[in-house]
Length: 217
Image 1 (cartoon, rainbow, N blue to C red):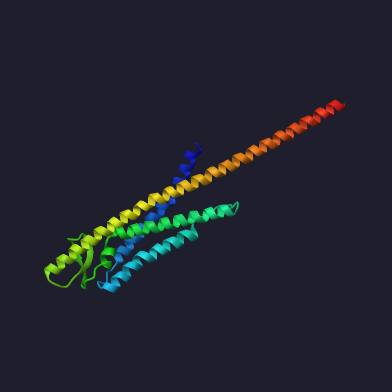
Image 2 (spheres, rainbow, N blue to C red):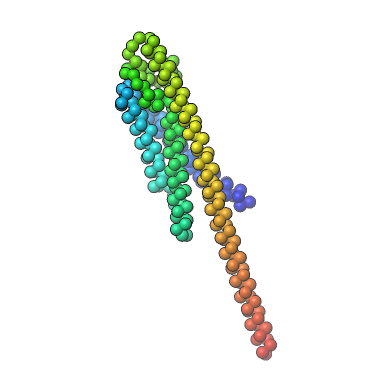
């Protein structure tokens, strides 16, 4: 019964928060996606794509770590350390969610590896809004188009590989919190047993005292 309650509470509090934050990140990625422009210059392509991937990741980590709700009562240093570890894992989780959204889009990595010069133009064949279309003959355009498609696919595969880390982290969090809960329950049970033994001893002493009083009378 205790385990069932704990699991329900875990999914209600933690996964609910992660789900809401994931929706916010997805909406943010869509906004960036609409505003994204690939410079179609080898150096700037890499710089822009690194910024698109790294800056939101760092912001996600810092925001989650700094503003995640703390415990209302800190019993000891050990509990504070556990809470810090908990915040660290959730911060990593939100960072991983952003990296998944970043790579699964495909266009960012495809832009970063576009080593040819050109113009950022529309191409319906690729299934994306725009890409770096080289200025050259049809053979060059076709080769570049195939390379772009290849890197989009690789980026999406990498995104889904990163996605596998999300349930792994959630499982780690679940196991860690379950151990903490069981340890707290054990402490409470031990404390309760100690109280019961203390009450029992007091009752025995009171009874012995009453017997001695009766004997004296």
